[in-house]
Length: 231
Image 1 (cartoon, rainbow, N blue to C red):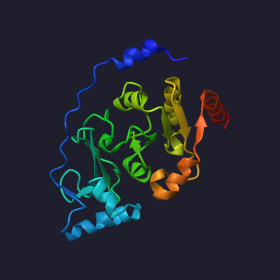
Image 2: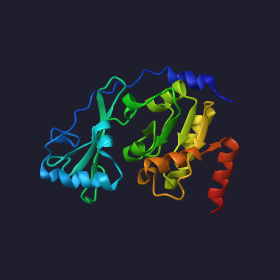
Image 3: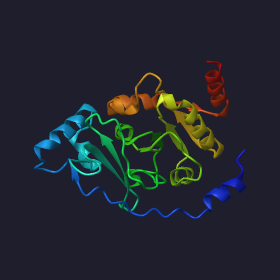
Image 4: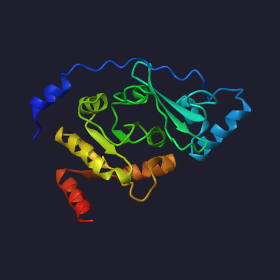
């Protein structure tokens, strides 16, 4: 049973104002012509991840050759009005620090501009996962609180959600699923137990896996949790 008094407290709370984020001054879009030869390493990395030129153009994926985000793939995020509200910076040359993201709030909806809220939403961990799964949103980690912009908009706009977090984040997936179920949403869990992550698949493979997702309820979540604690 949904506690509507709690819902009112959450959904009537004033929204956090997220200022626009500037992309690094060294950012170069990898979709442009006349790239320097040094861009080849970054492009090769994206090819190795199964991305296409269309993906690069569509998501405005770029890189930095110098500066704070040197030798990192930049994937920008745009809010529903087209303003940049975040970006991820992923190393492509084996740097020990895989991600070096900007020191700004993560309480955003990553690439809200590209989401069709009339269709079911899929929640994934990172941008590379999102590129492989249609109409998906990376939660930039493996947690999603009820007070976030993303959680609120899902509850307000869409009643069918797929969860596609990595299998090593199963306990956190359960928390997200439970929260969504408590708000009356239909939730489907994508089985990621036999793959590295959704980003390691082709788009076709990811769609096939998504279509085989199982609808979950509080009883099935309890069963999963119980089996985890028996291991």
